[in-house]
Amino acid sequence: MTTLLQINASISNGNGNGQSSQLARQFVSAFQKGNPGTKVMVRDVAAAEPVPHLDGERFGAFIAKPEERSAAQQAVVAYSDALISELKQADLIVLGLPMYNFGVPSQLKAYFDHIARAGVTFKYTDKGPVGQLTGKRAYVFAARGGVYAGTPLDTQTGYVRDFLRFIGISDVTFVYAEGLAMSAHSKEAGLAKATAEIERLAA
Ligand SMILES: Cc1cc2nc3c(=O)[nH]c(=O)nc-3n(C[C@H](O)[C@H](O)[C@H](O)COP(=O)(O)O)c2cc1C
Image 1: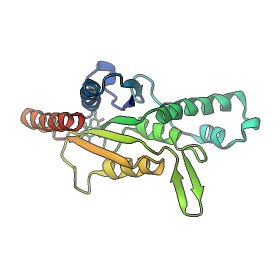
Image 2: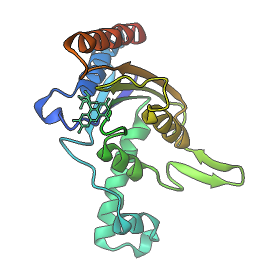
Image 3: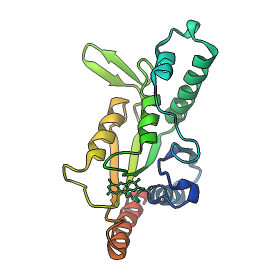
């Protein structure tokens, strides 16, 4: 039985209309049809439960010795541990990825900052860092107003791929819904292309 973690990162989720989250949900529904009994967890990092930015105090909690952590530091670490625990349980990670101002949502960056923990999700070795969250697959559903895939303006794909690899997740597939803000026609075409890919991938 598969355990799936859907991560939504759209600031529009509050209205239920984030395109990236809708595509992620479409994939999850199609996957569930083919894999009944799949356990689904949902983590909304931007709208429902925004992840706070990593600041000096929060990072200080990560690197403090466990026995010396204050109550506030313990709470910060417990929050990070809970995010990591969900990831560890999941065999399959489904990420809805909006593009905002040429990058990933700042709350998704904050989420990444809370799950990159030395000695927990990656280890430093004499051969460089080694990711600890191995044996997982990820699907990323990227929604964009413009068209960037395959061009130097796509700063998201390399960054997200590199980050996931860093924590041990190297089997990552991207699906793009692009041109969503260009015209009604390009939006329809971008969503139709992504939907076709979702059906193929989930089959
Ligand atoms: C604050 C903001 C910034 C955006 N910046 C970009 C951008 O830099 N490039 C782009 O192609 N689209 C941009 N868009 C359009 C979004 O990528 C598009 O609306 C996409 O559907 C967002 O995903 P979501 O619907 O899941 O939130 C921006 C949208 C918002 C709200």
